[in-house]
Image (cartoon, rainbow, N blue to C red; front, side, top):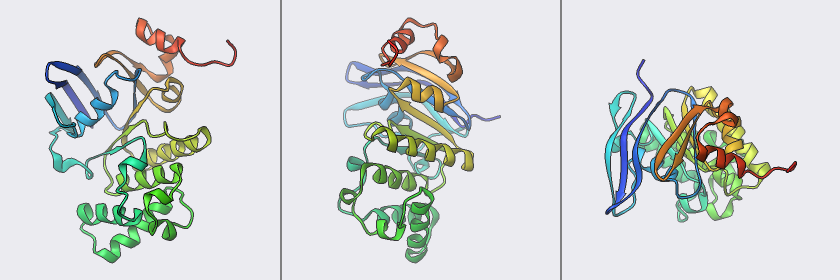
Length: 249
């Protein structure tokens, strides 16, 4: 069976400084978590997979989706990226609904009227009340949780097979974050997608994912089943586990 995502010897450099170093992994239609401290290279890995590197960065290695080498036209229809803060990811000068409709028109070739109707349906699918009203609003008029739901609706609009979620709940409070994760879980299950969840929260990843990749200094130092995270053997993973806040210690 062809892997949904295959990453081979992927490296990202800024001049002489490597921030991702020879990363190799594959995944199917499953939930895979990438964990590590800030600066470990997690977000850069997600952006490199999508071919969205910042100026000055260079990349080597191979990324394939469904067995086909990645090209920029796979963004949206084959793969999508949800970033951590919708305030900086959504276009502040466009209404939220128009941004979703634009994606639908680009990838599904819908008319303007069809795209508007479908965009409202997509907002409703991510449990936004009064989606027709939210369609008309600008990003700054939405709460953090509602903005993140709108972002998820936009990224899922073209029905991608792979979703990369980069700290999708870090800007949200605990109760709202739980709702967003439940939404992602439902959507991944319903659509039969694969999700690569990037997070610094080990407990979240252990509860949400099937497998975990642990990154340190741009490299994957350990890969294991999420249910076995508490029994990890690598010293760095053990340090991450020991650094978690606990109420009983």
